[in-house]
Length: 160
Image (cartoon, rainbow, N blue to C red):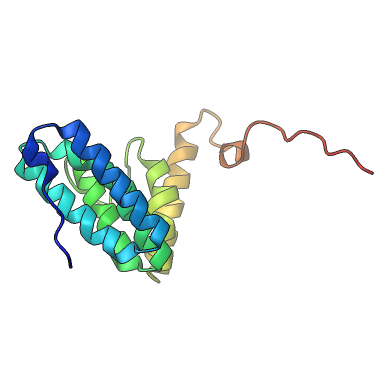
């Protein structure tokens, strides 16, 4: 792997972030998804060495998209768990019964990734727990199906 320069060393973190974002976008255009994963990890290391770990948080989206394109579900799972540790300050205990407001993440991030990793039973349990938690938080105990679709109605299509 070719080395990338540590732009955080210069002192202007905003300019470093802009330059790195342009570099990541260029790699995405070129389809160099494995390289994106490597570069994102390196950028976060540079950010942590500069004293501010949060400056490297912009790489999370790119690092999650790249393995998705490669269909490398193990790398995607690692990126998701690293993001969760950075975002929540700790790793979530996915086998816990309640997540207190984290049901959305369980439904839309963890569940599908578990299916891609062929962990069907655990993914199914997570879906069921997240749905039951959502239902228990509602007054009448039901989940409106509208929460899974766009609430704005589509404009009528003229028939010719």
